[in-house]
Image (cartoon, rainbow, N blue to C red; front, top):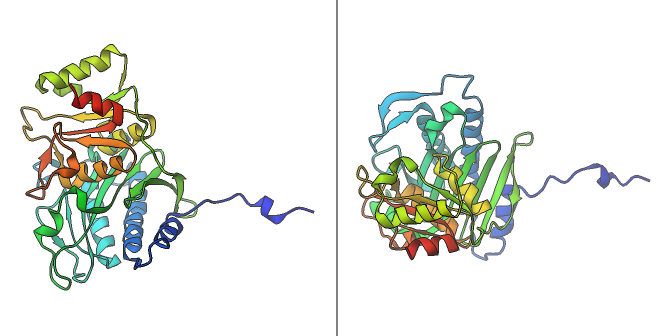
Length: 329
């Protein structure tokens, strides 16, 4: 007789089930953070759909506008920004958020929400025109301001050590959501046929070493001598240079295969280019939770206490042994 169970292939653990099981380990867990992560995953599903349709509808290209950073906005930048703002407002758990695309704090109207979020809605969006992987990066904090009142700047400038969760979504050959809540890093691949993120990368542990370095060689002549020396050493060892131009994609590859990502300061960007709140902090938190390292070239990124929302920094992140060698340069 055939066992009916043998006819059904296992689906795996969904993101929702994984989060619920995780919360069951904490006596006082209220479910609010779980709901917030589900709100983020909902927006990610919608953006993934938009990205997959990008060549068929009029969402490719620029808007002829600049964002608050003075950078040209792509249509998908605006779309992703709106998608996440709506999902977080309707979800009810976030009292306010800040994004790379907007100047100041965005209130959701949920003044009793316990959390605030810093988010880069669409990292590497200029690559959408040529079908290269792009992503979303997010960072979650428990608010420090009084419940029932509007969020304050202090809620967002707590410093990287105060993050309670962080993650990213990469929209590529498949959509993958990777996150940490301070207890390891796990990745979930989107299964569109059932509309769920399924656990696919359990307990991601960054390889201690690697043979890949990710850097924009176009800026090489503007790097300092020690940074140039490290890069030359990578070349002499015949390491592979892999630079996609989407931070999420570069980091994701290195976190699975081993490698180092370098974005030094340049003459044009003397304080570095990457944003501490939206890019550096969340990826540094993920790195620390997966046995990797992240610095600004002199100190751990997570030890920085930012002074403004759009503060920038040089950024170096990757496999522990490669980072130790880089810091000893």
